[in-house]
Image (cartoon, rainbow, N blue to C red; front, side, top):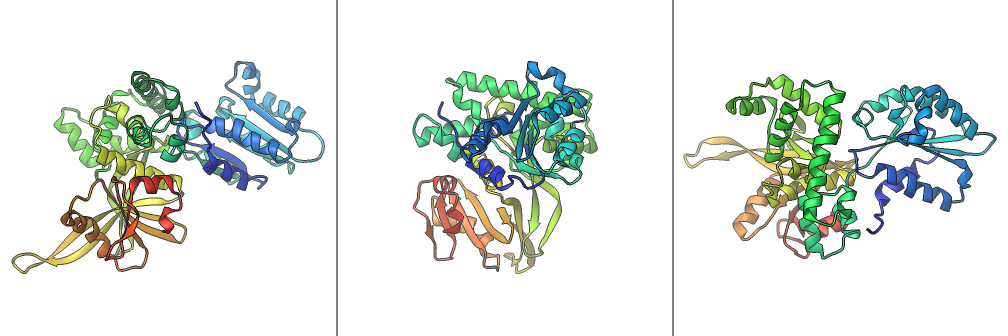
Amino acid sequence: MKEIRRDIYLNQLIERRENGLIKVVTGIRRCGKSYLLFHLFRRYLEASGVDPSRIVTLALDDADSVELRDPQRLSAWLKTKISGHGMWYVLLDEVQFCPCFEGVLNGLNRQENVDVYVTGSNSRFLSTDVLTEFRGRGDEVRVYPLCFAEFLSAYSGSREDAWMDYCTYGGLPLILSRPSEALKSQYLIGLCRELYLKDIAERNQLRGDAVMEALVRTLASSVGSLTNPVKLANTFQSNGMAISNKTIGLYIAYLEDAFFLHRAERYDVKGKKFIASPFKYYFTDVGLRNAQLNFRQQEETHLMENILFNELLVRGYRPDVGIVVHQELNDAGKSLRRYYEIDFVCNRGSQRCYIQSAFAIPDREKMMQEQRPLLLIRDSFKKIIIVKDRVKPWVNEEGILVMGLMDFLLNPGCLNL
C-alpha cells in the first residue's frame, strides 16, 4: 500500500509547534492519529534539524510499557529522558492507559523547554470534554478518516472505481490494505460491533447495546434526513420498542461525543438564527454507516451528501442546513409561508458559501428546483451546485457556480473559483 500523505493535519501540527500548549490529536478510532504523530510528524521534526535523541516517544499500549502506566512512574521516566537545555519533544500514544494522565501532562507542560503531543484511541480520550482536563492548556487537532483525495492518492485503480469503493467502504486507512470486498466488509462490521459501539457502551455504562445498535441502524437508514429524539422515539414505538426520547437524546450525544456521528443544525438564513430542532445527522465515515446496514441501502445520492459534509469538515468549514422562509401566493391568491432548504450553509471564519448537492440535473426544471433556494438569498456570498456528473465548472446566468463532484473533492481551492 502506498504511503498516504496527511498534509492537512501534519501542517496543523507544524503550525502549533512550540506554542506552549499540549497538542491533543483527536478523532474516531482507526483514522490514522498514531501514524500521523509517530511517523509523519516525527519525520518532519528530524528533517527540520531536531536531533532524534531529543524526541521522546512512548506507546502506552505496548506490552513493554505496562509499568509506565502508573502516573508516578511515567512522570519519573519522562524526567530521566529530559535533561539539560534546549527543546525536547514528547510524543505519547494511547495516553489514556495511564490513570490520571492529565496531571502528568500538565506537570510536563510547565517546563518551558518541552513540547508535548498526545493521542489516544479509547472512547474516554475521544470524548470532546477531554480538553477541559488540561485546564485551558490543550490545543486540539481533529483528524478525520481519509478524504477522497487522500484515498485516491493510495488507491490502485481508476478514479471511478475509487469513488465506488469509497462510497461503499469509506475512508478508514486500513481499508486500502484489505484486498477483497469480503475482507473490507468484515473489517468494518467488526469495528462497529467490537470497537466503537462497545467502547461507547462501556464508557457510559449503558444497560446493553441493543438500543444503541437499533438507534445507529435507524440513523444510518435515514442519513441526512431531518429528525429528533421525539420522532425517533415514535419510530421505535411503532416497531414495538418503548424507548423514551430522553434516552434517545442521550445515546445520540454519546455517538457525537465519540465522533461516530456529526450533527448539522438548521439555520434560518434570512432570520440569521439557528432553529432548535430537528437536526440532520451524518456519519463520520460512510463505510461505518454502510456496515451498520450490512451494506444494503447504498443510495449514492445520500452517500454523496454525507461525503460532501465530511469534506467540508476536513476543510475547516462548519456546515449547517440552511432554511429560507419565503412568502408566496398559492393558486387561490392566498399568501403562504414556504420553507426552502439549502443542503449546506458553510462558514469558516468570515467566509461563507451556500452549497446544494445535486446528484444529477437532467433538465432545466431540475436546475430551477435546485437553484431556487439559492436565488432567494439576498447576499453576495458564493452559491454553488455540485453535481455527480463530470462537468467543467461554469457560472450560469443566475450567477450560481455549477461544478462536478470530482472537481470539488480533488481541488481544495475550488470554492475560490
